Image (cartoon, rainbow, N blue to C red; front, side, top):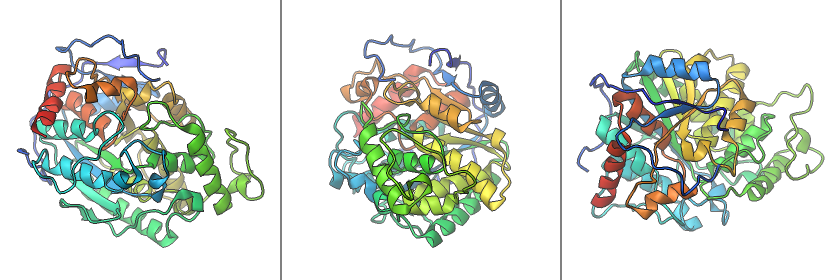
Length: 423
């Protein structure tokens, strides 16, 4: 992957512009553990891995421009499968991960939060990265409830969705709900973009178990995604994910799974001439965030930039955007949309994010070069051993710190560690 990597460490210098929005409370490969510590005085680089020309043009266009952060919260019972995710030490903890992360993103550290950040096997929630960036950059935040098991403790925009059933059942969501969520995404994408005609929308998510639903949707769309996705585990649990996905595809009778079981780690495309309805696919084996994010990004791309802030999950959203725009005859501007994540995802040797992006082609994949190698906190240094990696738009928010104000490694690390001290 080193040959694909092109650094762009010269982005920055913000305009200081502010826009109307919902602001957070201002008060409140596995990577080598021996990897060199970056110069703390240097700007955090943004590395472009695929579709280099498009990625660099996008960065140049939105350098110093205002941003808005929209984070879509959802839930799937897939998260309750033992061992499927490390975003919460137990299945019970994982029920509250999105709600706790949303509370922290909005309020910052509180002495007695209603929903404390859930315990992890190792590391710390990526919401620390997101909160540090939006607090320091004064980025407006919009939280969307696409389908949570209980109401959030902070203000959110309720989209009228529902949590998804486990994808292994093959009937994750009602089709009427999926269609409704698409319309909500289109509506809100247009509204948010209207506030930032010269800027860009950072579109993040929090769905525990979402890399497994992403694998399911990508496979259903015909992409060879097996073995390429990432996870919150230090070494991706590919076999477990694939077993769950196979069960869901069989139960939903999608594509080549209609009549036979497919061997482990084979990923056939849909039968020749068979058109897969992307909305039916999400209803069968997806989660509520996916279709909202796809609709929001499609609509927003018509008038502003879109930074899909995530790894595997946002690559699946991009693939859905392609399929939905064709199926529903929706116009969008692909050159306005990029996927931005962390280097812990892009360079995770137990997955192949770059290869996956090339498969979905054409999509520009980029990542922040943020490093925790010099952190004095072991829960942050755990990222350098492959734990956690991404979530809550962390990579996209770190990219914004470079793009908007040219933050240095030391600045963002200090802001994140200060949040930990305040917890």
